[in-house]
Image (cartoon, rainbow, N blue to C red; front, side):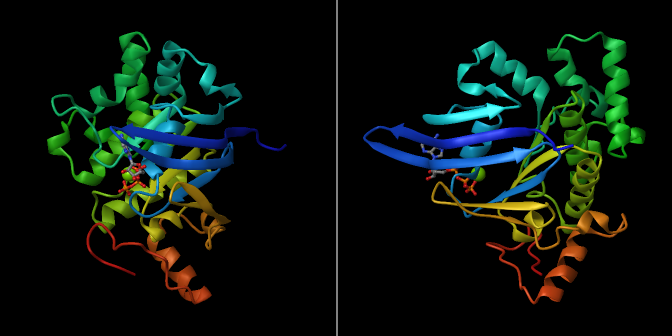
Length: 270
Ligand SMILES: Nc1ncnc2c1ncn2[C@@H]1O[C@H](COP(=O)(O)OP(=O)(O)OP(=O)(O)O)[C@@H](O)[C@H]1O
Ligand SMILES: [Mg+2]
């Protein structure tokens, strides 16, 4: 059975007015994403990636154009509806993790459920299940400063998962991680994709983007390329092999040197 379209943007324009100057950050973006896809959005600094992420995540609204999220017209939603969408239907993962330092891992993970008004016992059960999913059941009572960067990002992914959202939206999730932790996070996203999750990954690193099944390239506020990733059958490979290594092999095979617009966060290149 064909999967439903979960995200549909049509001719989205976003302008910012800053005093006398007007910046057009998005200049007519149209794209659609089907449930279960793993899509990377890549582009150079200032190309409009974060603006696009804010619109996709209902953190901001387009100046014009339309956005259908899971069949609902976002422009017609009230502020309360938008808050519900952000809380329940989208799981956010950010470069800086955004964990609350005074709360333990499971307390951080249960937060979106507190806003949703769920009873405490059920919140704890779900938070622990989400931590189990990211392989951190044994760190549930640790505070963020007692966890490595990669582990903190996995807690953030558990927090994104706990409401069982339609989409996981990740903005540079590996941007603050060393290559080993990046691999862990990419492998985790890969596993979530294989279990049927829809993932939108924003990155400026070509090797990270190639971990997705589809790569959309933005430049100057427009989509300039939209293609299946070179290693599109990567999820058929046995688990446990680092995603980035698999990509390096795929690139070597195809004689492609990679289109990285910058090096990796740890300064290495491939
Ligand atoms: N709040 C704002 N007010 C005015 N201009 C903005 C605002 N946010 C973004 N812009 C401008 O819109 C354009 C796109 O910015 P955006 O943050 O979406 O880029 P980006 O692709 O995420 O870049 P980076 O990779 O550096 O994070 C840039 O020219 C930026 O200066
Ligand atoms: Mg950005």
